[in-house]
Length: 377
Image (cartoon, rainbow, N blue to C red; front, top):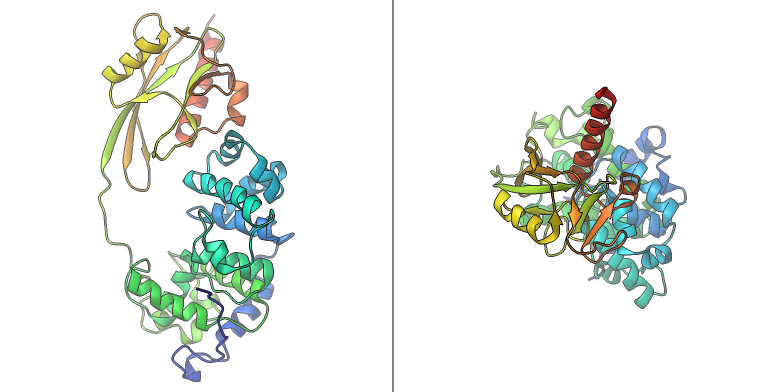
């Protein structure tokens, strides 16, 4: 199922007047003065660094990713070091980026590369596609940017650019629309400069052909952009059909011992935080009380904190924290790397893979406790 393509110097429909003087030529001419040339994964542009950046950039903005990328590569600079890292180390480095299945797949793919591909990402499209977490666009990005091979990409930015330029109606993730977009993406590949062309296409979507308020007068493709000509820039690409997110609730336990350490529980199962350390939680206060009865000795009733909401891609979660101070474990809880439960001091939290809302909750409680202590005469 190789995706290597022959470049097409004319427009996708074969009529040269739709492509003056050429899609790739104009894009690359624009890229020289206006594209992004100093992103950390461009220096060096190795397959490992391109792969990591592509995974991190899924659902996440470039400015957010840069700091995470630099921290991740400082700790795990190459594929063998990623494969050799512990699950907890990988999740801690990823903590805060969200969509944690990306990190689990990244780690699993690195291990498979050590077993099957001599410790490196394969240069074969189908072999790349077989690795966990690598889809068609990510495989194309790795091969184009790291190896200069003629493979197309089709991330969100590119879908937007092509949908507007060719005037393609329909939600881009719909199978028929996506097939049409892939055909255009593959037909427009140039003969050379594939790394720059690929980056230019992403940069154009990220900085000029933006979702809202696109800078059409600065676009190198404005001459023959169908959406601009027909006044449909704001309507294309077609938005995803509206969907009302279901709501869920949970009670979350903030149990601190006398030393100020918090009780954490490792999440398992198919949930969104699988593999992360989190605060123990239950569907309701009654179930949480049963957990406390099994695992802890506490003094008095919990202090119920104000509920807050966290939005996932497929539901909204209302979290009600229940705080206990001076809690004690009924059975021994490991201080470090326990199989399910552990105590963790505030100084350890930055190095533990915690979900972003849990980390924010802990930090707010520490700040509140510190303020309260300072105000106490």
